[in-house]
Amino acid sequence: MIRTIAVLATTCLALTSCGDDSSNKSDDDPTNTESSGATDPGKMDSDSANSGKTKRAAREVVESYEETFYSGDFTATCALLTPAYQKATIKDAEEFSDKPPEDCEAAMKIGAEFAKSFGYDPTSAKITEIKIKGDRATVLELNEEPFEDTLYSLTWDGSQWLVADDKSVTIN
Image (cartoon, rainbow, N blue to C red):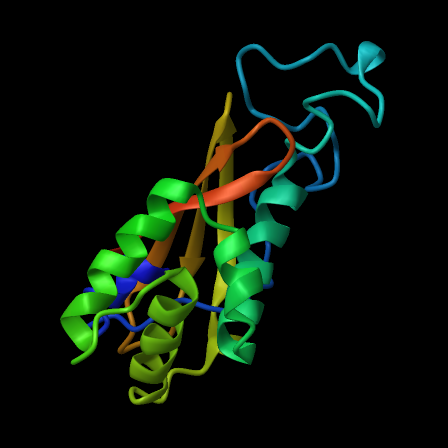
């Protein structure tokens, strides 16, 4: 989301998600990893390292990310980002502030203030596609015009999905 701050003038941040997923398996199906090396479902249990690698878990991370961002809980927002993306967020936010942010939370605050100035309604966004391949996932979120759609990249850290990047995209 913070990478999106750099292009907020034309995109604004993508937010609160609900929507249909076009796959045949449900989001909460632990075998629904769309990974060529998916764990044998007969051997998976709740303690399995892959048990949270579901479309539902990926969706929930994006939804939580957006919810915490727009509610102003920037500590929680930053906890959902990879360390590299937290650093990128700080760098991106420097372009929008007289005083460079000292940490991810301060960068998120700058981004939220900027996003609010565009009148974006996060409830209008809709997740339409989630793909998982190994330790990577993408979540596509469609937004109403004039805002561009957002493609979130997630990384599996061994126990949960974390937002690694987001980019504005145009879906035809």
